[in-house]
Amino acid sequence: MNISNFLSTLDGNWLAQQTVHNLYLESNSSHKCEVVYKSIPNDCKLVSSLLDSPFDKYSNIDTLEVAWINRNLKTSYELSYTLYFFTLKNTTYGRFIKWDKQENLVPTQGKFKWNENGILNFTTRKGSIYIDETFYMPSDKLRLSTSIVKQYGICTQVSFVSEIKFN
Image 1 (cartoon, rainbow, N blue to C red):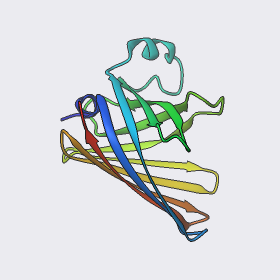
Image 2: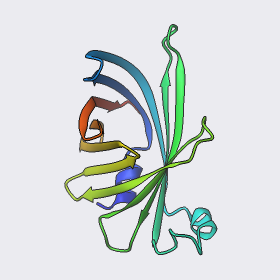
Image 3: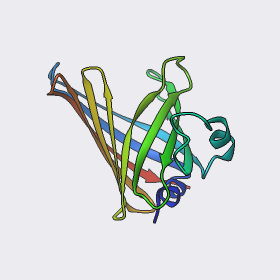
């Protein structure tokens, strides 16, 4: 399985349970939400727009649109973003860009590594903040992920997400 196939297995609606431990504030939170994924393999339109850019050396660009939807009456929100995966031909690693649709901020950039065992790892560095995210799909209907956030080399936050596909 390659990164394109992995992303296409995410297509659809998922029910997610997330637990976040803020080690700095010594607090925990947990919430449920719906997550909608839509993959777009080898986004040719994006490839042509990036020619003559720092990303033109990549042979494959996959796009994943993500929407986290919380329909709780007290804390209702939607978080939507797009991930662009840039890979070289016949490799299992590359770069990614995460663009938040609600914010007009500079997109987040990082590196990813794909493992044939179904494990996807992201690393991101923004100033003094380092984020390590790992995603694992033990089956087509179950996805697990962990995130570790470090600031100045000290772990400040960890989270665990489990998702079940329901369509």
